[in-house]
Image 1 (cartoon, one colour):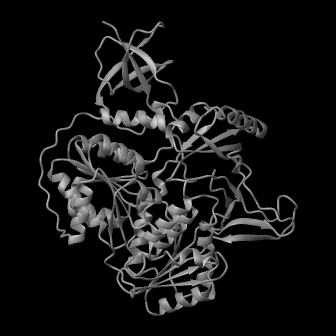
Image 2 (cartoon, one colour; image 1 turned 45 degrees about the vertical axis):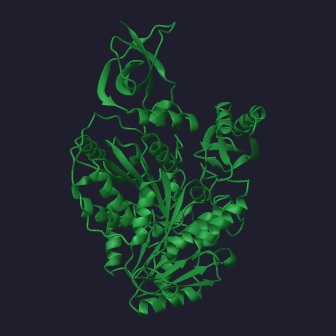
Image 3 (cartoon, one colour; image 1 turned 120 degrees about the vertical axis):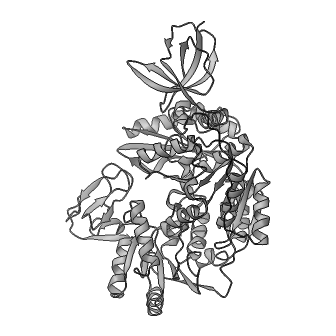
Length: 611
C-alpha cells in the first residue's frame, strides 16, 4: 500500500512538499527525501490523501524523532513569526528515544527561608518570575531546583544570554553537578556539539546551560526550564525565523506541563505584566554599602569628577569598571569642512574607527576601509571624531592614569571564550585596575574587588528612538551598579544630563516598573502587540512602491493600526534600500493576518529593534 505524507525540508524557505512511501511513517519522524537531483533532510508533518499529481518516493526513514511537543512548537513558530515550517525546524534536534537511569544528587547549598519560599513558588507555578536583586541568591535557587529535578529522574535547561555564559557560572554548575552538565553556545565547535548531543541521547548529560539555541535540544524527560537575565534582548533572534527564546520557553513549558522560571534583577516590563512575581530582596547590599553620584559632563568623555574618583579608587588599591555604549574608538568621523559623516558605501550608517586595525569598519555589514587622509566628499583634510568609544576612553584614561593597568571589555576585545576567561581572571587576580567596556560589563560577571562603577554615555541609550529606550537605560544602570560593592563599600557615578530620569529608580526598580507600565498605557507592549514589516530592494523606488502596495493591502485588515512607516532608520543596509511599516493591535491573530497578506515584506512579530 502506498502512503502519502507532507514533509518539511529542514532549513529551507519552502512550503511542505508531498512524498510517497510504502512504509507507515510516524509523524515527526526524520527522513531523507529527494529534491531536484539531491537528497535533503525532512520532517514528516502529516499523512495525506493521494494527490492528483505524481509524487517522488521518500528515500530513507531515520530512527530519529521530533517529539510532538517540539513539532507543535515548530509549527507555532512558523505561524506566529511568519516563516516556513522548514525554517523553524532548523532550530530543533530530532533524537532517538532515551531511557534515563535514576540518579541521586545532593548539592552543598542551604537556602535561607526567603529562598526556600521562592523555590516553592517557582516549582508550583507553570511560569513565574523571580525578581531578585543582585546578590539575593537567585543562582542558589536555580541549583536547588535542578537538584530536585534530577532526583525526580528528569533533565533541565538553564538558558542564559550568550554573553552571560560566564566562567563563574560554568564553574558553579560543575562544582555541584560535575559531568552531568554541558555548555552550549555559538562558540562551541561543531564536533563538541555532536558530542553533547550523543551524551544527551546516552542519558549522561542531565543539565544543559546555554544560549537561546539550547532551548530545543532533545532533553529526555525535561523537567524544568530556567531563563536567567530574562530581560536580555539576545533571547530575540534578529534573523529568520525572528523567534524569541524567552516566549517559546514559556510555550514549551506549558505544552510539557513543567515549570519555567524567569529570573532577573531588572525584569522586563512585559514579564512583570505576564507572570506571577516573587520578590527576593538583596543580601549583599545595604543603603550604607553603596552611594551614587550624578554628575554632568560630555556624553562620552569622563569629566573631572570621574577622573578624581578613579584616582581615589586606585590609591586605595581597589578596582573600577567604566561603561560606554559604543565600542571601538569613535562612532563617526565627520569632515570639519563640509560637515558630512564618513558612511559605509553599502549601509546608510557612519563607520567606526578601529585604530589597531587602522581601518574604518561598518558594524552592520563588516565592510573595512583604509583610514582616509581627506574627506572623500569634499577633499577637506580635517576629520574630527563625534562620540567616543571604549578604545578612545581607555586611551584617554591611560594618559591621565599612567600607572594604572587598563583593559578593554567589548566585542572587539573579547572575541573568544578563552579571551573572556583570561580577562576576567586577570581582573579578579588584581592584574587589571580598570575595565572599560560596553554592556558586556553588566552581564552577570562577579567582579570581586570593584569599588567604583562609572556609567558614561548612558544618555545615548535613553535617547534611542524606541519605546523601550527608558527601560533599557535604567535596567542597564541598575545592572552596572550591581557589579560594584559585592565584597565592600562602593561608589556608582553616573555622568548624565538627565539626572531626573535615573535618580528616582537606581535603587527602586519596582517603582520604575510601575511607572513605565503606566506611561505606556494602551500604546505599547505589554498593553498591545506590535508587528514590524520591512521591505528591501536593490532600487529605492522599488522598495518604496512595494511598501505603498502593502499599505493598501493592510487597509483591509480589521483591528490593526498603522503607527508608522516610510524609510527605515538605516535606509540602506548591505547595499539594499529599506522601507518599513509598523503595526499595532490587541490581537496577535490580526497581526498574523497582516503579515500573511504582505508576503513581500519581512515580518518581525514583537520587535525589539527598529533600525
